[in-house]
Image (cartoon, rainbow, N blue to C red; front, side, top):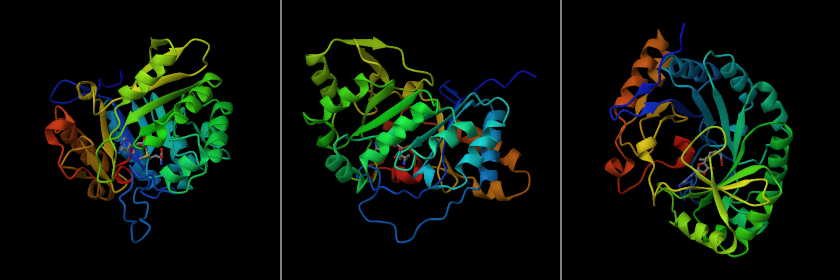
Length: 326
Ligand code: SAM
């Protein structure tokens, strides 16, 4: 039987990509991601491995082909390898990726790859130990560096690194040259990301400022992105093993090519990061015939996708990224 064609939204965009937040818990407190006040209690992980398999199977039946597991911090889940292995058993899945802060990655990368993870995005907001600890609320950048090395050695590819431009630390004169040195000698894809206005405090720094800084010092060749597509635009510098990319949701929104739906760790399906509406999937997951109800919710969410996030964004922002899943 031929696989189904991708689901299409009401603006004709093919929807083939599902992001699932597997936990709200996180071991870091990045200023741009978490609200300033800490949660009173540790939220439970509501989605079971079977829920995540059911959600993914429904999405694949509708023609979605790519799944990313995110959070919160996915590596806090002890059953992550089981989830990955069960997703890889699903027919028609073409791409299975993970986003992590890398704090716990070094000892786990090989097991994740063995379980069937294909590629990985790792957050790395600064290479300077003090600046990194400040931005992340106490993170250890040396652990992330070991995690990146372990991901490369385990054959996870491509390895993409996310630098959110939410603090001047990422832009200061010492920051960018250090990132350049890092990319010079490693086959990684470093992306500078403009911070989205979530409920957390974010300082908007246009990616253009980094691009101008780099262009004054190096000749940048525009290159196609590594496998997996996505909204980043990449550049290569002669002699460098890695590439440098820019993701510009604020200065140059890429909604016209949006291909994704998101499921939060609370089991809410969101048509768009900024949608005021979401669809509660827990009743369907816990009720009889989950497949039928999940498929209908996914279709309704695709139909509810706005043309552009600017059409629906509320002045108060959206729930924090660690809840929705970045
Ligand atoms: N804990 C994992 C991590 O740190 O990568 C996964 C979850 S985190 C929410 C995933 C990604 O969300 C981060 O790499 C970061 O790029 C992105 N993110 C979070 N808040 C953001 C914001 N306000 N604007 C843009 N990107 C954001």
